[in-house]
Length: 174
Image 1 (cartoon, helix red, strand yellow):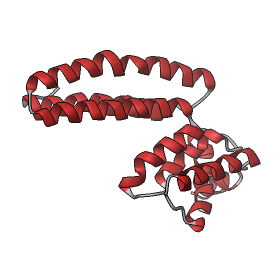
Image 2 (tube, helix red, strand yellow; image 1 turned 90 degrees about the vertical axis):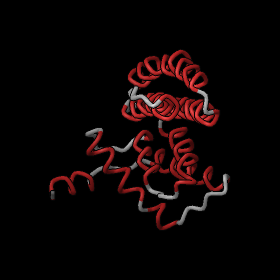
Image 3 (tube, rainbow, N blue to C red; image 1 turned 30 degrees about the horizontal axis):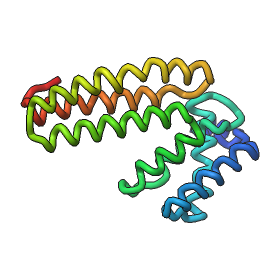
Image 4 (spheres, one colour; image 1 turned 180 degrees about the horizontal axis):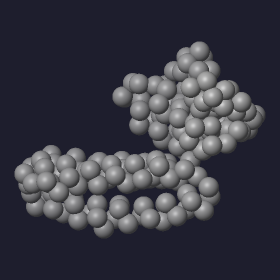
């Protein structure tokens, strides 16, 4: 444990990362999301830990700012947080999150209709329009040296929307 703690403490956070962190805070505040200064400062150790434990590096990068999305628990602000943080830390993951949002809207519309036919059409739309974009996003992230875990998680959440439609409208497991 002490070795891990010492490794995290040795991670440097360059000014470019701190500037992006401040830009994230400013953008969130512009959207009406207040960020307490003390809580904001507490995200720096999270950024260090991500750099050390996830990426295995001794200098934090902008991509390590993705952990900031976990610093606030208000579910009403979670979507805006992900959008802003990923927009700065991993723009490709931000694209994946927008696909998730579209899939959720498609699923909601189908489920609210109560019509299994609309459910089948929504599943077909998700398969044809949303899921095919993920291999390219994963490839782009790998080429740019960005983390792919968030993109894979987004892909899984899109697939979950198809399961949700099948469960709620057709009474089957997908």
